[in-house]
Length: 498
Image (tube, rainbow, N blue to C red; front, side):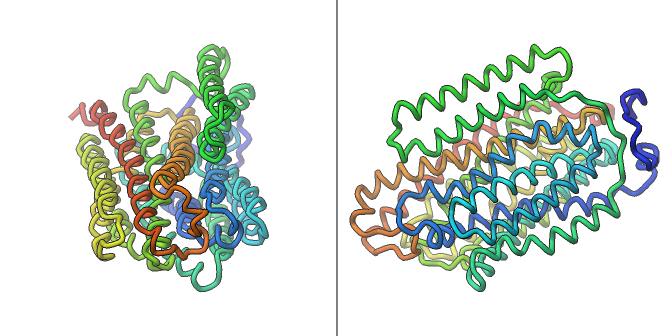
């Protein structure tokens, strides 16, 4: 409970007292539907990228253009997250969540109706804005309605949602792309969005609101800095890493440094309350989730291009290879969440991140034209076990010590670092894949290889496979940073009291 003087008092329903007496699980399940849709949409698009390229960008062999379908979404998702978390504190997480869900659902309709790659990229950016309004509210509601000693189970469900989405997204994407066309990966969001909106309207309580000032300068600086860095990374290979590209990247880093300095000097309410980072576990969890965001986004692109273009699998067949990962992550994540309420988070996080890293190196070793397809099920299973100890434990550790007034800000920061990791992963893997293609297949485009049609000539398959395998080493190496980081976490306070 916070000081009543901090509340705007505009809610008509009784809040925190009443919410502490009611069962918080129905509200969480309602919010999980929207969160699930966001995650499914990301994984669906990764499977559909080759089909989207063939339909909307068939005349180039450059992969950077179609990757913007993912990067535009992630960039529009990441930039507003810092302020959308505060909006939830100020106007209530339920209200902001519903607005975001409406935007996301309508933008999905626009994506499906897009007749050009540029139009699709624009509507994907609008989708990202809707997702940025929704995501911090799910974690804020968990933080504000579940006591600290029961939060692990709730975050276990949050983590299990990621695992199930990893199964449903690629499978649904493969079936929809093969059966109806890539447009239907977006049309499917319409009924899900309507159902999620109705359930959230009925089941999610109106929580106490807290007065906040909004740091507009901070929003501007963070937006400019992120855009300069991401655009420079993603388009660098296309423009042969010209001096102006490096100037954009360096400029973005400088702007982000100015942003951090401005946040430290802000006297009222900074966009990023740097005091939250005095909690070691909050700081390390943010480092960990940024490496996870980078890795999960980056690994899917070379993997799906390898399956579909080098091995000739359909989107559905490619998705079936992810079943062990998704099933094991979805089944084991709730158990990991319950264990987290009783054990040091490092006991789950270190093995989880390490197993996921090993699985990525294993994938890289297997990605050649002669590997039997069934063997890709093995690293998929290992990754599922690892990911069950990754998503929920990181989120729980980050938010366990947050005060209710800072729930939105903390959730916004956490989701921002995750999404920034995803944005950088999408941009970096695009540049890395292109550079590996140039190294392994110099002049392949002139020789007749078409990376957009789904039909690779036999003489380029080996070089293309090597390029995709080498690309997998980038996310694997980045995730190792997360493994090292979580070793420095502290035992949670509620366990020290035992």
